[in-house]
Length: 258
Image (tube, rainbow, N blue to C red; front, side):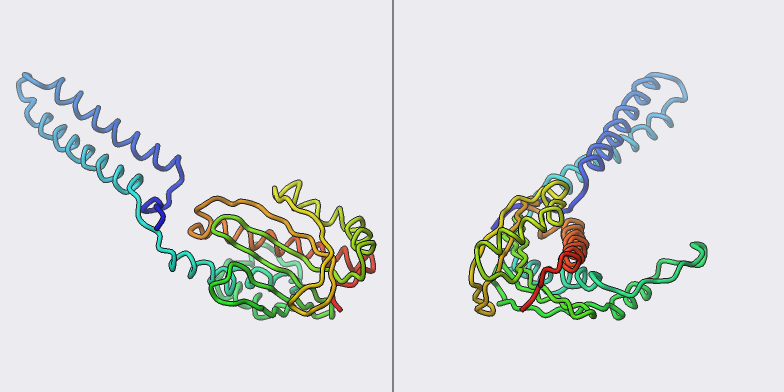
């Protein structure tokens, strides 16, 4: 078991909420003190006491809700990992290649769930997954309508995320050549995304072929699997970066699949 806040709320929301309640409690006490002993002041004192009671109760409830902790079950974390592998991440990758919309007046456009679903249905990206439920990683074969394909790997260990790309290569020397050409394409991960990692040459078990592979790691924090914003951000960021990497490989004549 591991402890987590009962609900997720940004720190500023917690601070502002408690500050308002404390201010209300102080104001109620001040009003009651001001009218204490005054003729015809009983009504104000009763109102102030009621406000103070509500504020005091609110402070207690806020402290319990914001700062109490609950146990996170191991199976719950694993289910969240599986949803990331099978739903959130591949849905983001569907937008690596998609039909572009013509320009229209922005007043004519509306945000609708049906529009988002239509975009995913019309995606020109096909995705295959190789994953053993319960394992901390999954392999994805991304295929574009143009015929270009790429194998990548997502590994999630609670908050530590690793992204790997596999580029066909016959030798260490070819790995060095590929890594030099694609240095700029992968620089966004390091310089903007905060990832760390390096290139390797190896024969991979998923198809028994040799690859130049780059493995990039970043720690998103212990609450990563419970935070939908972080998971969506990571997935969208990887999808957008992968789109650029595939374009760079095509431009430089680097094969991305055997």
